[in-house]
Image 1 (spheres, rainbow, N blue to C red):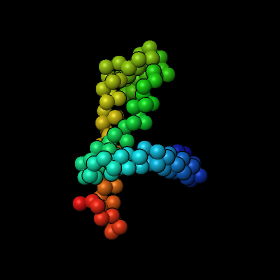
Image 2 (spheres, rainbow, N blue to C red):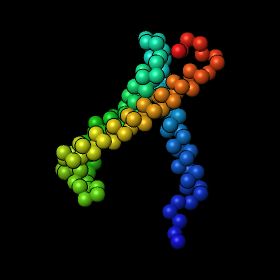
Image 3 (spheres, rainbow, N blue to C red):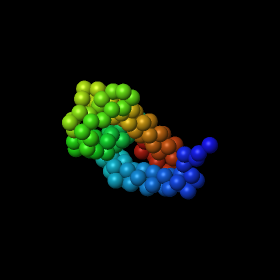
Amino acid sequence: MPKLITVPGALYIVIIGFVIALAHALFLGLPAFFALRDYWRLHWWSAALGGAVVAVIPMILLNLTPPAYDIFRQGGVTLIIDGTYTRAGRIDLARRVSWQAMIGAVAGFAFWRALRSSPSVSHLN
């Protein structure tokens, strides 16, 4: 049975993923937290909303440029024709952005919950 990925390859993927996630948290998540903290009282819903926005920013920015494909099919459905999204492509993009927003909202809520349970933070309910 052929190996799909080797141990050094998996370690490389984990390291690259960690670096990207750390940069994402430092350059997008931390400024969002400070903005929420300075201008509003940090509630669970504002942390979840901030997490959702922070999660979709890179995906939206990457999809502002026209696709590099002349035609792209996935699962038998044409998503891109002549470098522009088809209706199915826009629906697929909206679905992916929605999933990313939900994951970000869960991460924002988890951050709020961890921050709230910290004994050194007294200004949160």
